[in-house]
Amino acid sequence: MTSLPALLGSRRFRPFFVCQFLGAFNDNLYKNGMVVMLTFQAAGWTELSPGLIANLAAGLFILPFFLFSALAGQLADKVDKTVLARVVKVIEILVMLVALGGFIAQSLAALLGALFLLGAHSTLFGPVKYALLPQHLHPPELMAGNALVEAGTFVAILAGTLAGGLLAAGNAAHLGIPVAGLVVALAGYAAARRIPAAPAPVPNLVLRLNPFASTAQVLRFARRDTTVFAAILAISWFWLYGALFLAQFPAYAKDVLGGGETAVTLLLAIFTLGIGGGSILCDRLSSGRVERGLVSLGALGLTLFGLDVAFASPPSILGQGGAAAPLGELLSRPEVWRILLDLFGIGIFGGLYVVPLYALVQSWSDITERARVIAATNILNALYMVVGALVAAALLSAGASIPTLFGTAALVNAGLALLLLRRHLNFLLATQSWLRRVATVRVTYNGLEHLPVSGPALLLGHREAAADLPLILAAGQRPIEWVPESGPRLQAALAAGRLVVHCPAAPQGSNDILSAKERIWHSLAQMPVPLLLVSTSTEPTAPHTRRKILMTISPALAPTPASPAELDSVMAAPGSPS
Image 1 (tube, helix red, strand yellow):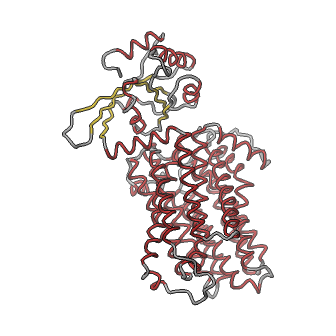
Image 2 (cartoon, rainbow, N blue to C red):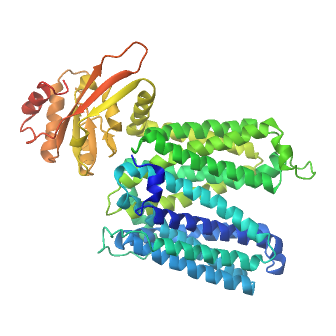
Image 3 (cartoon, helix red, strand yellow):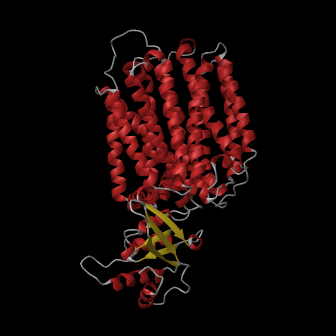
């Protein structure tokens, strides 16, 4: 497993990381700087209210994700991603020049137009950002790369938001904001120039320019694989959940905690640093694997800490008047420390939740469609955030308090997590496997070199090993899919190029294991793939210590058994999982 510092220092990753960090930083520097400055100077620029300007800015920034994400995904599959990253950075430089002209001319239309173009720039870079990682990183590095990208993104959001606010408070904000943005954009272009080449997987792809038709197409790509689509929906829910909390921080700090601007900054910093810390922790807990078991742990933390924010929050002081309490006074109250701990916990478990999901989408998506699948993720992310904002506004307008809103979101999160575990067995089995490896067993894997590095393969274990066989999900670096029954579902998983583990079992009410193996053989006969046998054995251990399990993976059988009886004979041979 590559260490995080080593990965950050590598030419394969460092320029890309710097490029994406500066892009996220610049988006938030310009957006927040412009909104804050216009909040206090809007009277000299326009008759629109500051509140309307803030909402208009948010809408214009997110609109390109609906309009251009599909095109961005097509371009990232058709064009070298490094070339596309450089083009995107050139666009960012031009946008900052438009913004500079808008500030000098005091043109609100130009400033909002630049913000729309900045959203389009982020939309184009999104599929490049996530589809490039699997091309430049080795499989054991994928979790670490995603952890650093997620941590870096949220730290960049925080830093850019703070920098924009500070620049907006300066005497020359109309020059400081766009000039700083231009400098950051130039630095981002310099970093993009050092990103290694990432050849296009489908250079002959015909672009579909109709945004509605192309959006429908990329959503169809995303829906082809039920596990990948479930991961995409879970990612989008995470962005809704996080955006809901972030959007309420100003009103929560003022009307619930009784603080001012510094309290808002503190809440934002604690939440963001928590997500960064959780992303880094995720890499440590996963040991370099795409560890789906952490998703359930993350969902549990999001629910428990979200509910505790609701319970720990004091009654609203809205309408009681009075000046905002200084930060020192807020920190002298025990409930504020509890709330800060809860927000940090939400961030930590949010990192554990979302990093494996992104890694799963990247590793299980077909390389020829990966960027378009990422584009579908971005579309759904934007849709979920907009819907979440509308629902939150409706609940607040109906009289719900902000703590009640937080508690409601936490309960919905629990329900969605249970639905994910119920409908997608692999997430539940991965959770059980991870908990067992942490708490009750020590697993040694023998024969990992026999796992193919690409393409489909079937890992076959005996039903007597069914209790321990799910531990195979943590073997190697490629994600392994558990398929409980043979037939069409088994064939579909193998056709998708997966590593599949299956345990033969007789039909309910029958002891005819041979008939189960016949069904497996017929599946393999229609789709010849490598067949590997998996055996498990328990090693002696001292009392009150974790049980030691040895899991052995055989070389691929060559040739594949010629008949169901031969398959049964092979599995019954000495050393096979019988």
